Image 1 (tube, rainbow over the protein chains, first blue to last red):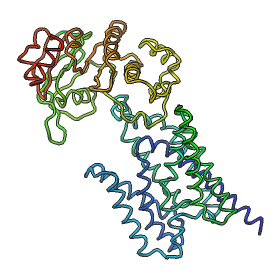
Image 2 (tube, helix red, strand yellow; image 1 turned 90 degrees about the vertical axis):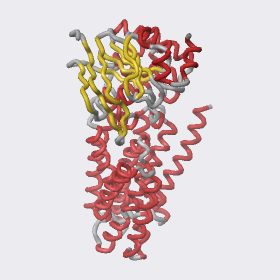
Image 3 (spheres, rainbow over the protein chains, first blue to last red; image 1 turned 45 degrees about the horizontal axis):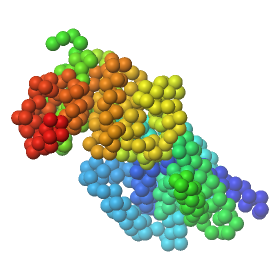
Image 4 (tube, rainbow over the protein chains, first blue to last red; image 1 turned 90 degrees about the horizontal axis):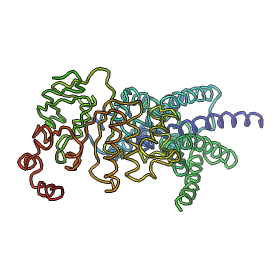
Length: 262
Length: 230
């Protein structure tokens, strides 16, 4: 029994650290592109997909993924076609996502949908998560400096001969993958925090790009580690604990930021 | 037409959201020219640069000499402070080698220790020099310089143009400059393009910048300019 618990804990921990680290790394690009809040509506929009997955007993990330893709198409349409502010999008998508989900979400599984559940990942899910996040990480690493230039100025990037549309498309696909994996761990409500907070904390304490991106990755991975560890000890849900650990690290980073200014 | 032309623009029209921003503009740039582009806010100056760089759809002809390399200094980069970026990081985004970065910083008058400084901590004048240096990586033949309307301290502004003049000599650059400063136009440019959607005047500044053309270009602002530089 103890051995069984240990193996399950190790699986959850490994999955959590990989997803947290990749989300932090990705977040360092989203923060600089003022895209961090996009993960919010995307996460919320996955709720109907999560509800379906819980109802029919298949993987939550798998249920979430098509809805993230739908969300990305929506964002594209909203931004390009209507020029509505992102807050309007957040409000509309958030409420619609939650409303649809609660039409058919079994209420006893609401917690899993809203704040995630990583405590029961099986070997196969852990394996896929590790492989997929590793691929995301490598692709991000390859396109990182290009994405930074795009986020500074699309004009400069284009005048350097970069195919900005190709970069943005790959970037959105990576966001979709991370959000879909993230909802498994922290649920539809908290995914935005998973990408936004590590980057925000790392920015407070970095003066160069390498520290910033590395910092966001480490903070993301560390928050998952601490959150899942405390969940194991306390029997609270891991999702909220991971996010609260992130928040704690962010608050500490604020102290260092102010020190640097003096 | 001489053989050493760098750029030929013919009947250029640029439309954004079905509004004409630039109408029927024609001009030519020869190697070694310094062309200033003068006009009020919203006259289409920055749009002209973006079009010349191939960033916007257009009607009419834009013909750059084949194989020519362009360097672009944008007016401002509002999002750059979102990211903790050192000066060195910024140059690495353009795949500049350590040696090249050092040389280029040196040529715009910075010591190497500036490399470690955070972009967000630079003064507006320093940042503008960094943008010029960044544009000069890989030795472009033509520099397109978009002057910021605000945010540069006056002493900085003085030195930027003497810097540009020196760089032009050292690197044999052809320059297109957007400016709001008539003294720069007079002192520095071979030709001026007065732009207010369409071409208001075009030619050597002392010949084409008359009270009448300036009034057409700026309206009431003319008095201010004449007073300041007259």
